[in-house]
Amino acid sequence: MEIIIPIIVLGSLGLIFGVGLAIASKRLAVHIDPKLEKIHGLLPGANCGACGGAGCFGFAESVLKGELDISSCRVAEDKSKEEIAQILGKRLEKNVKRVAVLHCAGGNKVKNKFNYRGIKDCLSAGLLMGGQKECGFGCLGFGTCERVCPFEAIKMSDSGLPVVDPNKCKACAKCVITCPKKLFSLIPVNSTVYVACKSHDLGKDTKAICPVGCIGCKLCEKACVFDAIHVNNNLAVIDYAKCTSCEKCIAACPMKTIKSRK
Amino acid sequence: MNIGQFLAIFISAVFINNVILSRFLGLCSFIAISKETKPAFAMSMAVMFVITMSSMITWFIYKFLLMPLDITYLRTISFILVIATFVQLVEMIIRKISPALYRVFGIYLPLITVNCAVLGIAVLNIDMFFIGNKSITGSFYYSVFQGICAGIGYTLAMLLMSAIRERLDLCEVPKAIKDFPLGFIIASLMSLSFMGFNGFKF
Image (tube, rainbow over the protein chains, first blue to last red):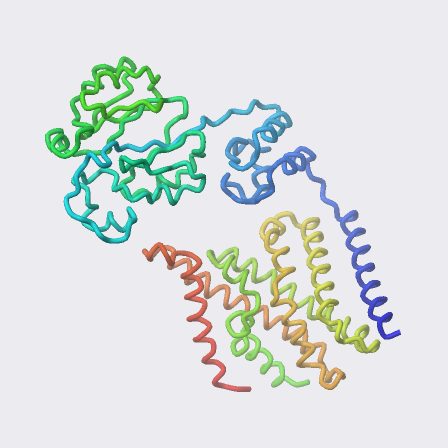
């Protein structure tokens, strides 16, 4: 008997509350746009907020209103995005996949100006007089980017430089943010050309310390027929909106600074 | 039942035994929603409402259901049941009646369901106003009043915290302690200062 009373009491309490809530939910049901419910159902439901909306429901609302684009959801699979696009009667505009590249080719070819014996980490090495390399802009080679990459897409090579595996790279930009020398950038995956240097030093100074640094000779600028590469403050920079990866600049570059990802 | 008793409950619940800063209940919402004053205030109002209402309901449940049947050891689970149901019901009602209010409260109401401050106050009411398995005179009013006062205490802590954090947002702090670590440090300092109220015992 002692055990039956609590069971009955708690059971009936639960039952009453449950039924009460069920009735209330029917009585107090709010009419929601069926489209909104469908879109919400197709979204991942992680409520991560990366899209800029207030959770998945907020995102669904703003997508329906046309304030946000479906492609700004980074988590949802392409398939469910297409289904959402069908519900809205729109075509899905795909974001161009991007991939990280390293803007330095120095590595072991650049000498050290002093013998750094601190923590083997680029962030701490960079704090000491801007790092141990002769070139103040170049890669320090302690592989902080390798450790920070969540997809194991970056590996340090024997030449003292990190190498990005484009198949594994998800363009999360962790390396771009972490690198103390800001040597990484994300470029469209279908562009193959990139400038492997970040040095703003004068050509003469660069040449003295690095065999592959950009000397700002502007030969690439002249070779480019699409007006896509420009030397700015002693450094060639590619405008990927214009670049067609014709690779004429690679042939023109006397220092072999401009490289192909192939 | 006299005015002095109510005053004692008020000062005790708001300052000396502040739900957040002295009892350490409901800390998750205290840390999570105290970044800006406006949502912090909305959350506080929602918590105050729910604590007051749940104090009322749990008093009835305890007095007329658990005590007569001599199953008072079921209070925790039955109170949780009551609070969860009540919050759900309130959410539905607000959603129906006032979509604007729902937008303000909407995200916080489900959070309140699992806010230990609500259960904490309900249990505290029972501990304080039911002595020797009998309710003291006026225990219902005391319970409801304590619910309101706990809500005021919660509001006070939330407003202080959010105001401090809003100002600190503009300051340059080391990256390692930005946001939550700093929040914890502030919370602990505030808690220390609130412990000063323990000096005057009522």
